[in-house]
Image 1 (tube, rainbow, N blue to C red):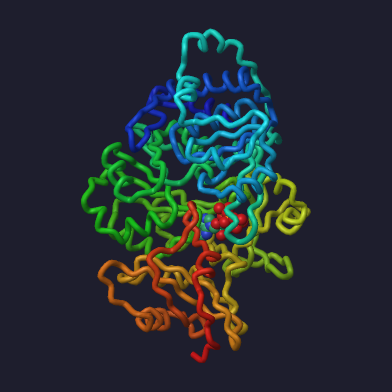
Image 2 (tube, protein in one colour):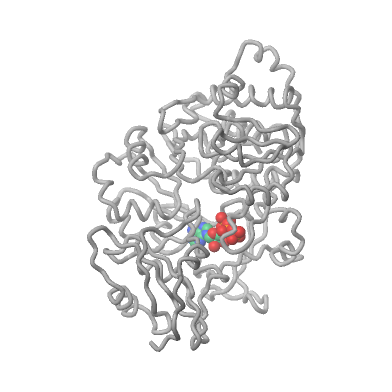
Length: 513
Ligand code: ATP
């Protein structure tokens, strides 16, 4: 997959010597030739000095930096399986991840390395001066470069073991092959626009999440210039857009919500911005409209996918498609899809809600060491059960209602928390919101909202409940409200509902409303 992305760049780029990558905080810049030289130097070192071999696994515990894609390209070109984890993972989370992927080496930074166990080839610190000298071409290395032994990988070989976020259960190791990664990159290639200059793409999405992971290869295949941010910070992101004339943003929903609602955006020149691509978690149509009113020249589109589908299953392909409010675009050509009745497995017609099932070239090989999860998620005919309640309209646009596991069961009804969250987020005095099921003797469960107020907002519990009640059927009414300072979220922007459940300390009496 690394070779494939590099050859797309080398053979088809109108700008082979353009900038490959920029560090947004230090402004360090690497051209494509600098970038490729660093990949080759590191590959040589890892092959000859570290003695990494095809099918070894490398565990990566690093925040975003310009060195992470260099590392990804080097490892993949050696046939080494990449296994990146969130650098804020705890020692016990890391030990579970390591028990799944069985790595021989780790790459970390000085702040994260203490959490790692001892591995066969140890840990390499990518923020050390030694690493800088490895990746910076030396004359000795230039001669030795001829010694680089070419490694052949087949499409069915593993490229990565990614960890699912664990938002709905235990963390699983998702096995992705080179074919999966090549298919996802190939899906973007037809969209290579006739541009006068390269796309300047700023990611706030982390490289350890499947979204950032596949983007690192897709960006090289399309000869994009990538501006990397270590972590999201609205002011720093806006400053970087202005400074580096960013044309495209790749973000999770909280960034779109922040841009739609914050006055900070007024202080920056954002005229270079053409597109904002958002994915990883639901984004409400009302917030999309507020965003589009504020930034009428920016095309805001949604992409939808899972770690298990190598990141992208659907996306909007044009500004007209982006205006299909609430839709996550059309399914990519890499997969076939059907909506099924989750209980019977029967396929449903367009417009009907059911579980989305997908199969095709971007679908994972399976979960590592978890036969039970494999048999519940993968159908014997190769269909992946996404666990998402969706519908596809008559023109092929996909709409995600919510995750089946997260639906609130109120009496005999099902309530989608995402619908209530999107409604709450559309309130001008509400900065952010999340909804969880709250146990109730009479109803089974009732919707409970956690609300973050906008500064100076005077909204109270009754105001929140009345706002929702006026716009939804009675069974969907919010029946308890808690004001909080922030909603806990994953790096992909997903609400961490288990953290919210821990915050509810007082038992909720039976609902009489
Ligand atoms: P775990 O399976 O361990 O709970 P996870 O599923 O949270 O982890 P991901 O693979 O990051 O890990 O999440 C995929 C899920 O994210 C999808 O199944 C869907 O529910 C949600 N999702 C992704 N993009 C969108 C989107 N644009 N709109 C709505 N939901 C989305």
